[in-house]
Length: 174
Image (cartoon, rainbow, N blue to C red; front, side):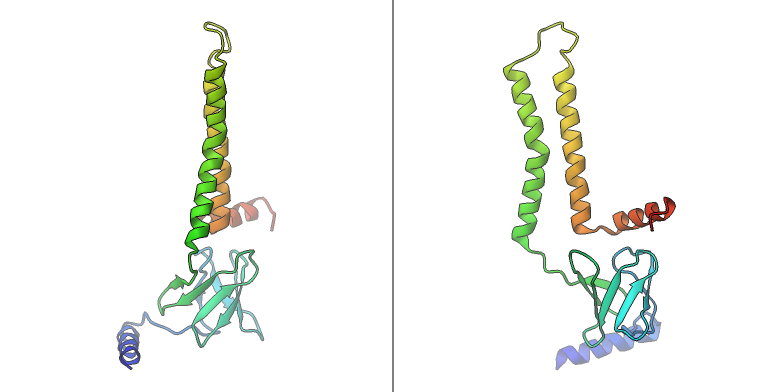
């Protein structure tokens, strides 16, 4: 009972400033994925589409939520009246496993190269004596870039999604 009165007070307060509004099919909202485009209702459906990133969202108006449907990882956001709030329940075990695997993929190959270069060092004064150091650095850099790319693909960071859409538009891939 107290929650209902508190939420009504909050809605009344925000309603006076003009900031609070309910999620409605004819409303205009910023896209929760790319944070650049606007959501527009799809005719005869309880769904939205973003004109920028072109994701499709199903709407649950009683719960004030939208869910992205055309992604490999369906994500849900709740409309707070002024902005989107992610409703994903972070699976701690999966997150720790993803970060641990990323660290291993970034660190293990350069470590193996370092171990082999110190077990069988190049001859002093040879023209290739600096090659193992360069190979270790390049191996770490390339593996780190691969892991970073996989992380931004997995977590779908808004800046990355916006950049991907803009590059797609620039090169005519859309």
